[in-house]
Structures are given as C-alpha cells and as structure tokens.
Image (cartoon, rainbow, N blue to C red):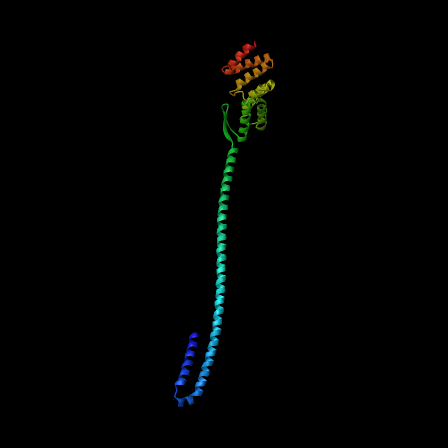
Length: 258
C-alpha cells in the first residue's frame, strides 16, 4: 500500500512537470486533459491516503491486540511457573511426609516385634529343671524372689502366694512354694512355713531341695516347742535322704533335741 501510494505521488509530480514543459500551442489543447488527469490523480491519491489510514488503523489495532495477547500469555506463563513451584514444593513435602510415615511404620513394626518377643515363652532352668515360662510369669517370680533376698519377708510371702494363685500350673510352682516357706519362716510364721514346706514336698518329693524342706519343717516345729514332732521329722529326713547335707545337719539337730 505504501509503495503504491508513493507511485501515485510520483506520477502526479511527473504529470505536473510534463504540463509545464509542453510548448505553448500544445498547452491550449492539453489543459483540459491535464486538469482531468490531475484531478483523477488527486482523487486516486486521496483514496489511497484514506486506504492507507484505514490500513494503518487496522495494523495498529492488530498490534494492540497482539500486545494484549502477549501480556495475557506472559501472565499465564507466570501463573504456570508459580503453580509449578507450588506443586514442586507440595511434592517435596509429600516425599518428606511419606519418608516420615515409612520411618514410623518401621518403628511400629519393630516395637510390635519386640513386644511379641517379650510375650513369647522363654526357656528357663530352676533347681535343675528346665521348662518354658511366660515372660510375665518369669518377671513375677523373680520379683518375689528379690523381695525375699532383700529380707522383706512379709511382701515376699504374699508375692509367692499371689504367684501361685496366678500361675497354678507354673514350672516355678515347686520353687515358689519352697521359697514361700522360707519367707514365712523368716517372718516367724512357723505354722504357715510348715504348711508351705509340706505342700512343696507333696508336689515335688524328688526335688533337690526336698531334704532342706524337711529340715526347715523340723526347725519350725522346734521353734513352736513341738520337740516330738521335730524329732519325728528329723528321723524321716535321715531315712529319706541319708546322704544329704540336710541329713547331716538333722543328726546334729536331733542330738540337741534329746
């Protein structure tokens, strides 16, 4: 459009110059044609100028539209970048959360395994006997024994009694009755001690502590001033377990009672 407009203007200028250069006699015949040509060129030039203005306006409008589109696109790109940054941050947080959850699951699984192991029966050996014991059963027995060793005979006697009630079929049963007898003897409950030792002998006559239990019965009887009963128990001890250390001590005790 601009090139065409320039062409029209050059043609118009050439026409004007040509008119001036014509001879005088020729100008008389050419004036009307020249004026017509000039008017036509002016009209065409004005139309071209108007078209150029319209085209320029269209181009300006298109340029403004393009600029707005570019601005909108830039805004969308910035929004997309911000969203990507947010998602990246969310993903990183999610990965941290998943890692923390996995760690907690491992810790929980380990805690459950440890708890299950603590609940599993354990192999124990007491007074030459080996058997499986529940962890809580073992703990309660050892707690009662610790009280006896600490000299707290009242609590030890009650603890061994509670243990037998809680675990009537326990492999610790014979030992619990024996040590309960010692705790009762320590607190000078001689009758209770005799009952505990006799219950022990009735349940475990072949136990390695059986001879000691009989000697303890005799001592309890002696403390109760039952010399006849003590002598009878000592005789039974010497006959039943003649080679035991308790039998040797029983002989000395028997001699002292006569």
